[in-house]
Image 1 (cartoon, rainbow, N blue to C red):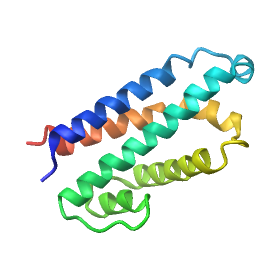
Image 2: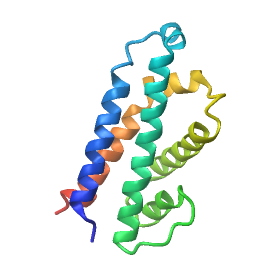
Image 3: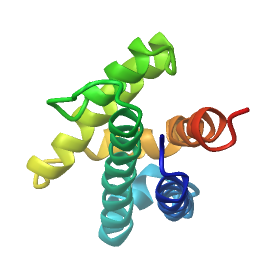
Image 4: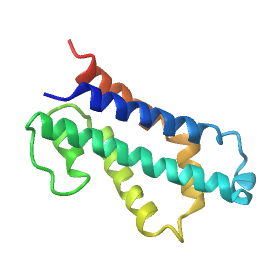
Length: 141
């Protein structure tokens, strides 16, 4: 059984990270490129957001004895197998893990075009994850 308090705290932190990123969405691409601080805040909070998603998914998988993940992205594969995720969500969340690895390992050469595009077009994927977890594990009937 999932420890709802643990999951809720992580969901709260995920929402905070999303909020910090959202504050910079009004920046034009040119202003984003000129603002090292904005880049740092966005990249760090994307990294933290993905880590929180992995952590939440790991808690769900382990606490419900759904499987034994060996790699970070495995938790999403297990949730997919258990029908909590659809094909699109599985693909998006696995790609997020790949992007997280780039943020953590190649932090010197991060493609700012990709970071900006994620900030502008993909934050809804993070919000969708929050809804999915709330619907299936926090406020389940």
